[in-house]
Length: 203
Ligand code: GAR
Image 1 (cartoon, helix red, strand yellow):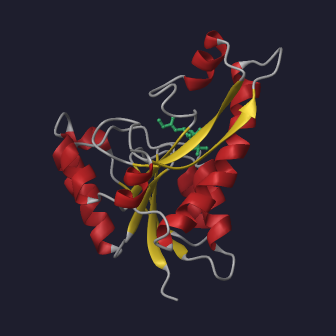
Image 2: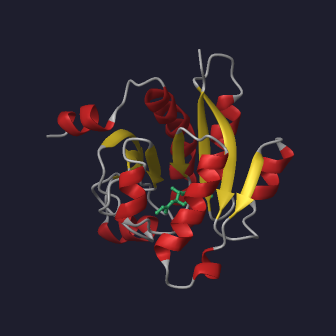
Image 3: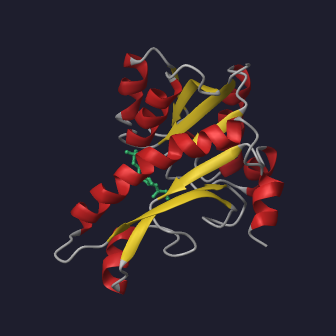
C-alpha cells in the first residue's frame, strides 16, 4: 500500500493535528503526515509536530499583506516541495480563495466544530448554547469555495447538557473531533469518500 502524503494546516494548538499524527502511526493506516504548515510562527502545534519528527513550515500570512493568492502560492509551493497528496485543515483560521480550493478540489478537507449546515463560521459553541439546541457536534467535510459548505464526509454529535458553558461544550465536541477526523481522513485516503461521490449522496 502506498500511503497518501498528507499536510496538516494549523493556526494554533494543533490538537486535531496531534490526533491525526497519532492515528497515522497505526500499521495499515492509509496516510502519512508528511508536513505541518502554520500561518503563524508561534502556533503551538509546530513544536508538537517537530517533537514527532514531522517536517514543519511557516508561511506567515502577514508577510503577504492583502495579497491572499500570493500567500496561497507560497503555501502551494510548500505542498509541492513535500509531494503532498491530501491537505487537512485543522484549526486553520484563514479563508482560502477559490484559486487554492479549486486547485486542491477533492484533496482538501476541513474539520468544523458544529453539526453543519448549522453554525457555519466562528463561535459555534456560544451560538449553539444561545440557540438552545439539544445536540451539538463536529463535521469533517470537503472544502469548496463557499465557507463551511462542502459535502460532508463524517459528522457526530454530543448532547448539550444543563449548565454547559462554552468551555465544557467545546471540550465535549473536541473529543468527537479527535475521533472523526482520523476516520474521515482514512475514508478519503482509501478513496472511499470522494468529492463527486459525497456530493451525489447529499443531493
Ligand atoms: C477545533 O475545534 C476546530 O474544529 C476549529 O478550531 C479548533 C482548533 O483546535 N476550527 C474552526 O473553527 C474552523 N473554522 P486545534 O488547533 O486544537 O485542532
